Length: 110
Image 1 (cartoon, one colour):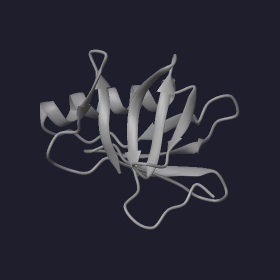
Image 2 (image 1 turned 120 degrees about the vertical axis):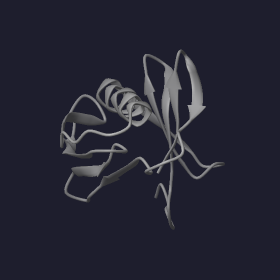
Image 3 (image 1 turned 90 degrees about the horizontal axis):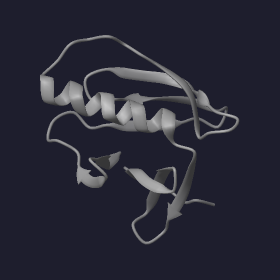
Image 4 (image 1 turned 180 degrees about the vertical axis):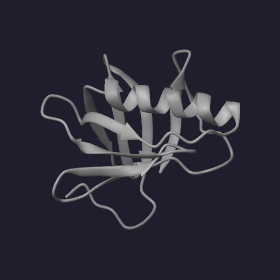
């Protein structure tokens, strides 16, 4: 589950509404919810995520704007850091945290 996104250079909580989710299968398939639309793709070779495809449904302006930022950050991420204290992963782009992810259930960075 996405907890916060970098907006204007600062991490901000996601909006109330549909939960933003990213799931990665053991085979490298990526799927989830961008809020209004579903997303699919694969893990990237040089970046955490390769190109992502989304459905194209319309929705409230604020949720669509958040979704665009989220998708932009996913595709721009050039690394990640495990955050064991908070139980999740931070996606990083250019040395800055752009997305904070938290587990919805039992998870271990193993």
